[in-house]
Image (cartoon, rainbow, N blue to C red; front, side, top):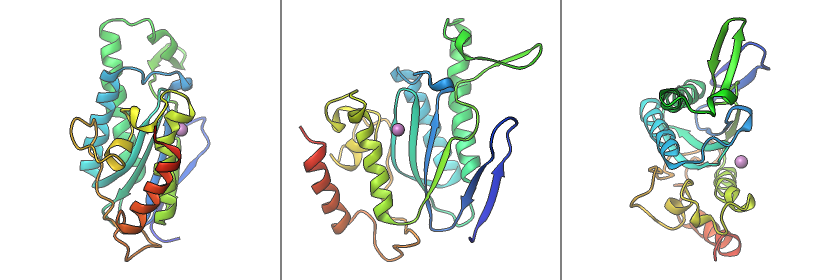
Length: 223
Ligand code: NI
């Protein structure tokens, strides 16, 4: 495989290989600590959205799709640079969101902190917002797979019965991508105009893909 590969080494965790391959998108999944539903209020979700936005800008990542679930997050990102580090991107956004949220919790000495405390070693405790380890990172190199992941994001809240229709969940890219909502959305989703390795000539969200999406959503995600 071309591109750089790095294995993040975190103690007591299996190593997860990250493949940074030009022309690939990445489908990232990460969870809250112990899968506790922590992303349940709009302030924290807004802070996470801001962290995603900043990390995307700094690492030159196009955000293609996302969903914030109560206890986990999915992001579909497409690096614009040929040399990139998806692990650095992920670390930055997770750290900046967790720092902000944990600081707010510490300020008001919130009861939930008791559930987030980790004994790093005897006498040294810290708080965790995210499950330790990097989570999942899946390389995506065709538009078909990319749509599949976007759809997976959008339907996640429906499958979990959090909402009846995908468009009712504020914290996903469905409204942006499928309903064309450009006002008041918590996160800007980028045009799918980067090329994927297996689809080098196809401008992503044009005729074919739009029609596929529409057909899919007409069947599955509409009132
Ligand atoms: Ni999920």
